[in-house]
Structure formats: C-alpha cells, structure tokens
Length: 115
Length: 115
Image (cartoon, rainbow over all chains, first blue to last red; front, side, top):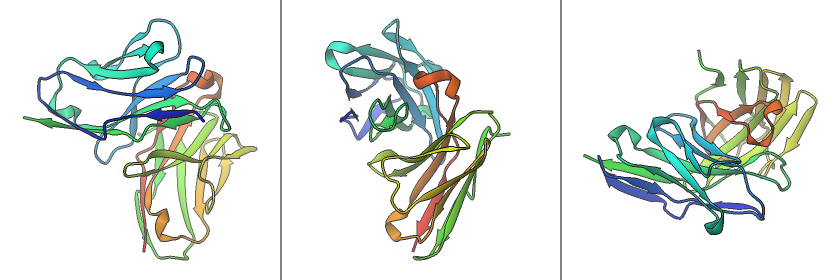
C-alpha cells in the first residue's frame, strides 16, 4: 500500500539555524507531493507542492523542498528558521489506491524553535 | 471571512449522544473531505464527496456518516459517539477541475471530546 513516512516526530532547532524535515514516500511512479504546516490551534496551510518539472520547489514563508526519485524523498528545507516557524509539519501524497485522488498524510513532525 | 468554516469549533459530549459537525465553504469547490487528526497519527480520511450526489468512504468511515446538502455544505455525523472518537476533525475542499495535483484547503478544525 502507498505510504508517507516522516521519520522525525519532534525536532528542535535554534532560531537562525537551518532546517531540514524528512519525508519518504512509497509509490512506483512519480507521485504528487505536498507539504502542509499546522500552527497551534489552526488548520493546515499548504507550503508547497510538487507534481512535475523542476525537482526543487519553492514555497511560501521561505521554504523549499527537493524531490529525489532515487531516494523516494521529498525533504523540506529552510535556510534560517524564525521563531514563528514553530508548528507541526505534514508531508502528504496523492493516493492512487482505493481513494483516488485523495491525500495520504505522514504522521507529522513537530518543530520547536529555541531562542 | 474564512473560505472554509467549521461549526462548532469545540464540543464536549457524552457517550451515546448523536453529534453533527458542519462545514461550509465559499470557494466554489466541488470536492469536500472530512479528516480526523489524532496525536502521532497524522490525518486520516473519513469521507469524501466529489459532488452533491457522490459520497465515498475513506480510510476510517466506521461509526460516521455524512451528508452533502449543497455544493457548499458537507456535514459529518456521529450517530452514537464513543470516547475513541475524541479527536480534532478537519474539513477540506479542493477543485475537481484541478485534478489530483490540486490543493486542498482546510478549515480551522473542530475539537470533539466524548466523555
């Protein structure tokens, strides 16, 4: 079955440091991939998405992600983290299985930012 | 005004009670979804609807039912609530015309507690 894995449950970084959140997917062909962010008490907001073309995708709030087919990965990066980036981050992929066109989510990575 | 609204935002109820969660959207989208979020499990799809006459079960539909009253409204019901349905519930919408790569837009969530 198709799956999305986020290996890190919780990451803490210092403000101003760089950030990389990992995401791995399982699917034979090129999937459609997304990163969402959930701030405390809020719904999910789309950061960026990939479905074809350039493997380096730029998103909002200074985030980017790189699709690497050889590693089945779609890692999220930011060069300099701000305190307001503290949130939970979800990677998702379009489900080509039973629920056609719907999203399968990873379990999320919670980001804490130290001053 | 928010594009996707959910009511109520918080609800505490007792085991065995019938509960309805409501979702409205002003985005004009055809597709609507209901997810539940549990700590450490990410988001899981309960039901989805491609239009008013098309409703489909998701990954975890047991114990839930839905109604698509209009293009803009999609309600989730718990006929007889049980404590393990305590969770954060999200409604989302997307534009069918956009295809699988289209963005899902999320409401702010309803926090449901079943005692």
